[in-house]
Amino acid sequence: MDKHNSRRTFISGAGSLVTAGVIGSTIAAGRKSTSGNEEGADIRGVSAEGNEDGLPIQASGKTIRKYRPNDDGFEVTEKFIAQGLSQRYGTNVVNFDPVQLPASRVPEEYRDPERPFTVSYPESAVIGTDEQHLQSESTIKSARSGGSTKTDSVSSSTVSTQTVTYDGPLYQYKSGSAAENENVSKRTAPINLNWTYDVGKSVSQIKSYMKDRGWTSCCAFYSQTRYVLDGDSSRVQDTNIYKEIDKTEQRHIRLYDVGASDSLNTEIVGQIHRDPYDHNQIGDKPWDFNFSRDVAKADWDGWGYNTSYHTESETEWEWDTHDGRIAVISDAE
Image (cartoon, one colour):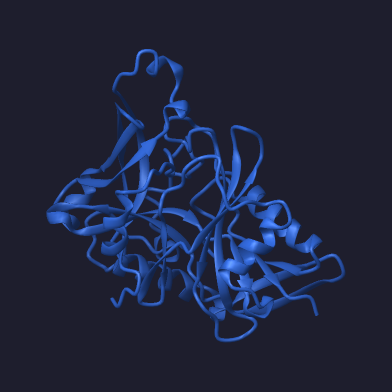
């Protein structure tokens, strides 16, 4: 694949960032368990463990996080272990880049005095290479009737239904490595925001526009790098936008510029969620994908833009707080 923002490039740079925040356990992060459901496998774009059909594997195993105190707080190392991975990737273990968690986000019982500790939990995760994840997204889109998605337009002035084609990314991914440092990644969250071409704003302009209206470019907590698959390339988030809920939680949008061919297609996509106090590094709060999406959608509607939903993204099966809809923001007519 031609990666204009290759994973190898941003993996090497991610180690210098002070970061935190990953999707937690199946239960903790509100992720549904769907193992063994063969009937829906093609629609979801995943294969059984060990299958060689070019799709990522949905594997059931466990995640282990180790926390070690250092001068900047706690370094967190994470790995996912599942027996079904070895046939495809030569190992049962996927390792992820270490992240740094501020000491203030760690429970007091581990801070006084500071000492290492380990957290583990069962998890069902979708693991694959970029090529496999891209094939998965293509499979999901092809499963739609006629290759189009139904969009319900709901704004302050109009209520209508139209059919448009959404060809943008469906998921956000987190980089990891398997045997012999093979690049694999984990599906971590659904794309749930879409600014169309006719909005006429770049990523930086969207950020500035929202910042002028109560959002911010600074974060209460540190954020970790994620990426989407844009055609034959992987695209690291272009920027982040935040909105404080209180001193312990925030809304967080990762924005990706993926281009567009016309006013009804994708221009910029986003992944919005709620960041809990510790980014679920230790805790068990849901990411609130739906409610967070609707907060952003309501803001843009209040600012005079048309807002709607892509209603058939076929991604609703995986998270309890995601109903499969992508909020669409377009220019007011």
